[in-house]
Length: 358
Image (tube, rainbow, N blue to C red; front, side, top):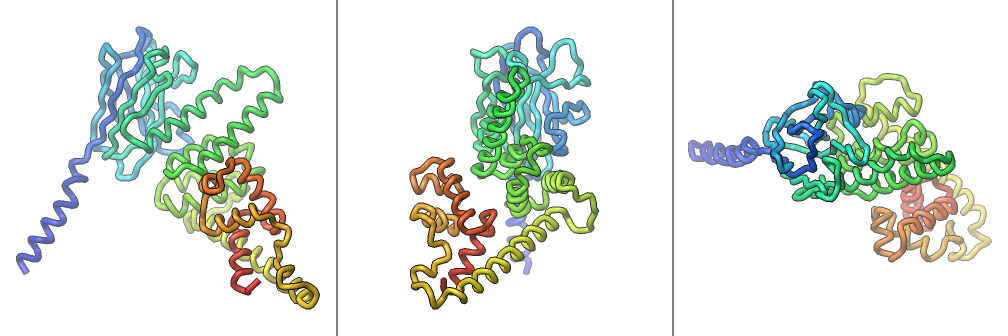
């Protein structure tokens, strides 16, 4: 018994010790002209609505920046879950209580990063740029490299106000939102995808793209269901959908139940309509003609097969050697021919038809 207790204790310590001594490390080199303080600030982002909110009360660490622009921050006081943080510098005329963030080309003074107590990253600004974080790169962490790619997509959008022509401005915003939806769909890391989704103009696009927000909500609930950011996302969805009612159930559960109920209802209606149609025509058409989607092309049939294999649009494009936009065009035509609205309905109908031998 004593031996068993000792072995258990050793195993516990082996599990506990690495986490107990884990320490994040953020180092790098910035472009720091005479107009900037030689301090770098790390602040937490407690809520999704705070993603671009500069609040000095959220500062968790301050470090010195050397004359050559190099710095290093270390610590082990972060929450266990990975979260968003902001790394920034401030101008000489400001105090730490004026935690301004700038996006001008020559004043870009902040970046967003994802951290937990095990993260090691190296931030390097382009020495050919003037801004502190001008055209920066991330070394040593794939998650933050992906977030950097997203940041580089978003930052130019702050210059949209310089566009003089209303139609050009509208098209530019629409393209950015399409790119953000596509980025979120193709990105493997859920927090980076979430950052892309919250940077879309949900106020404007929710009614138009509610299906995309709902599908991402399902993914978020499955992969990050106990995270405070998930609750924030579902709360925003409820607001934009006009649902002001409160519930004792977590919002992500409500979203999943609602989407499941809708999918099942649509599936039952389609099955009933299909069975009725097949019953009326079973004596009039051949076995080949009894296929309900007789008008789908060979390419659409391949795409439907890959959808049933849970392939993403990006994976389908890669496997069929076609552009991602071409995949989406085929899928839209396929949905129209099948009489469905989304992937879930398409998979449900295809599986149902397979089960009844059609």
